Amino acid sequence: MSASLRFAPPACAGLAAAGLALAWAGGARAAQIQCWYENGAVVAPAAFGDMAGDFIIDASAPKSLLLEDRANADGIDAPTAVRDLRLAGERISGFEMPLTNLNERAVRFPTTINGVVGWDVLGRYRVTIAFSPCRLTLQASSGRPGGRRRPPRGRLALKTVDGAAAVAATASDGTRLRSGWYAVDTASMGTRFSPADTSFSPPLRRKVDPTWRFQLPARIRALEVGGELFEATPAGLLPKPPTDLAGAIGLAVWSRYRITLDGPGGWMTLAR
Image (cartoon, rainbow, N blue to C red; front, side, top):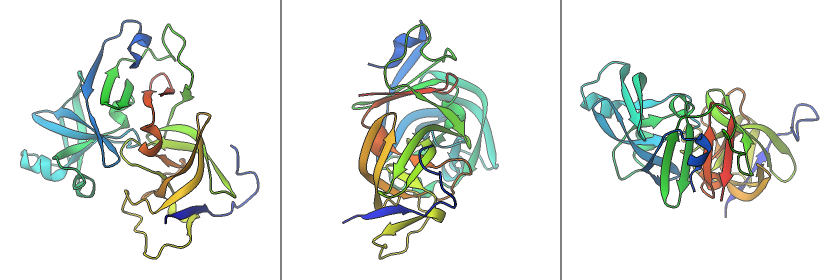
């Protein structure tokens, strides 16, 4: 039986309560590609220079990253690499990607993972992710909500917080509320919080390693986002808590919808 995640008491009172959308673009081009949703992450094909293959799509990652082992095998041995990045029919010329060790993420997949495409790329476009079947669409943003048409019901304010796509939400452990901006995590399953001000009831029998991003040992009592209430969703800890984020909401919530994130326009929609 799962443990319940609990919030630490606040230091002071008052903490609580703070198909695809192609028609919106008014003729702007858009390209749709197949993706897949596995192990709590969205994965899609992309190419970084001549290195073509599968990349994790993560709107909560401030920086796009290249898997070090994969890059070394391709003859790249510098801390960063600059190549043209191609994804879903879009090209970014001379894009720089740092090399990093992603082995703890890559081992969860039956395919070779080349890296992570983060919000520094996705935030330039209007991005739509459908989950059944999995489809990823990028298109140019008009820079204003909905272009010429009124956007559908369910539009949320979207902003960049600590480099990640984020929406306002409120989580409850049954006693206390945690309101604020939560990262839109498309590469993890659960809702995750800072280990500094959370606990588990009953206490976990084994030590939780906060560096293991994908460990979801508990459930949060309730989560409200966009006027929707989600109960008993998987919950865990953030490995490196950002300064200005209350947490991160993963695909246990987002996979129930077709989601559109418009970084330049500053909005997100949830369509069933």
